[in-house]
Image (cartoon, rainbow, N blue to C red; front, side, top):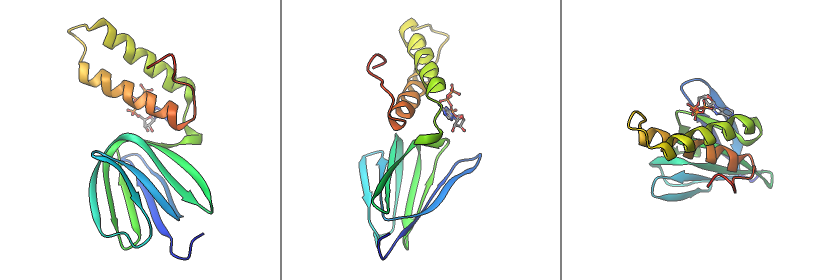
Length: 140
Ligand code: ATP
């Protein structure tokens, strides 16, 4: 662990996904990736669906984040998101099924389906598969 650590919290309406001391992190900002090292200036940013990466003791870990908000101040970083999962807790079979379902809905272009909702569901599912290191080649 570096001399100065950052306390990282990832919180959803359902649970505290985790709270850990980390060396650095990269969050999927709505305007692009945001890197955070210790003593970062205070900041608030919107997030998009993407992968949060953090380093701890030289190891890199991934967390799938379904958008939301990010705040950092005083070496305390908080991610608030509707849903977030550590890479190792992602159910790949479920994410693959969700991606296939969303793709079918998008392909049908049925007026009864909310297009944006299906697109967001596809994005979340693909993001989970990528965070878990699963192959998405046939889905994109
Ligand atoms: P699904 O259609 O499979 O429910 P979804 O994208 O609609 O996927 P969300 O509404 O984003 O699901 O999330 C609902 C809850 O389920 C959240 O707590 C989220 O962390 C969890 N979750 C969703 N998909 C997975 C997955 N593949 N593995 C583990 N947890 C998941």
